[in-house]
Length: 219
Image 1 (cartoon, helix red, strand yellow):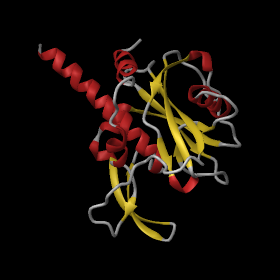
Image 2 (cartoon, helix red, strand yellow):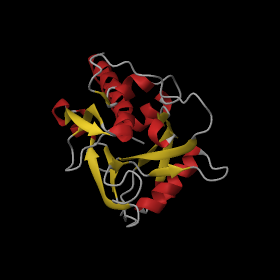
Image 3 (tube, helix red, strand yellow):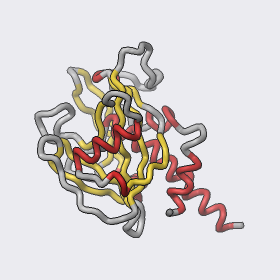
């Protein structure tokens, strides 16, 4: 078990950065000079429960995150995402995330060590409450994209996500409204939206870990 995995398993059991970290990457209407973000939690209970796997590989020199490019023509097609989808029956969040990852990228579920859950994120326009499940993969394995859902599988080192030079902000036209959109420029397709918001919380937790390591070295 890596130091970051041990840290995260303990950290995810306590209060998380949640919406504060998520909102750093939340798109907002450009007309709002000082946007006020509403709570991510829905005001009703008629939403779809989904979960995604946040897959962290640890067999390289530094942790890397697995991302997928969704096939065009499906929901959120052409966007970067974590593997995931809607809960089926009485599945737990963890079971849903692992099943979806197996179906989408050929993940061997038995090789994943689940560290815990990050903060849920409500996606208003799709009426989904998405729960991120963090899983560590320490043994190398080959991933195979399901062509019906995934065009590409790739990994990004944490160092690239932490680097401020890779975080951009542009004005886009979304649903006939001009939005200021924060995104990561780490692929030919920008990493933005719900996936970027969940990634933002993970990176905040990684910064906490790095600060803890730096502090212990000074003692």
